[in-house]
Image (cartoon, rainbow, N blue to C red; front, side, top):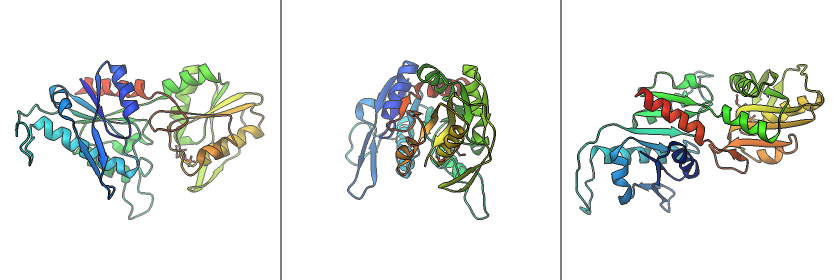
Length: 311
Ligand code: R5P
């Protein structure tokens, strides 16, 4: 079987292929001078993508990633259906339809945070993107989706996978934490999975977000005096959530504070902000950045196996 990738997830696609023992092929991706994208499945990959189910690894972030993902899905579907007619009349103009088998693995699902209609008139963006992608593939694997409920009732099967086992193993072997903290109620399930995997005490904070850059945490007594604490979240964007939680931990005597997440978005100078508040930042390779120290390959492989088992 084959794993293919476009421009935004090549290294992770290779890791996934290694985990599964499959081959990895890079699709051709270019940009026209006006910034529009162009994709093509190279001639020497045509047989591979038609022979067995194919996994496309692609982020729907930033926005260009959505378009690139859709174009790659379209090209994969065309090839599997045998639609090869082209203006230059190169090669056979049609082939047999080899049936469904285009699966999409999304390391970072952009728009996942608009998972509800918070005010009348809003689009539920996570659902809108989910439906768009579902119309072009036969199944989806999503990596630590902010709110999995947003992709309930999609017309194709969706497998949810998580990096918490790998984050737990990484934290244990690098910083040996004494305590795990969830910076808000939304991350309790993920952070407590890390605490349970290492066998550590766990707590959470109650967060109110005033706006994208302003966070308030309700005061809470935490037993962290003299301890190494890891704050675990699904994503870090501006870093505001982590910085506020780290300050609360320091005030209560924490000796070292680390931040760990699946998706390191690190927007608007977040790393510079974070290093003033925490001793270390640890992210998976769902997005490319200087803190992507944990491979997302094993988690994606679990998702692929689960999806294939259910098809
Ligand atoms: C929100 O509920 C998420 O789990 C993260 O806590 C949030 O997106 C982090 O954003 P920021 O780094 O901007 O505070």
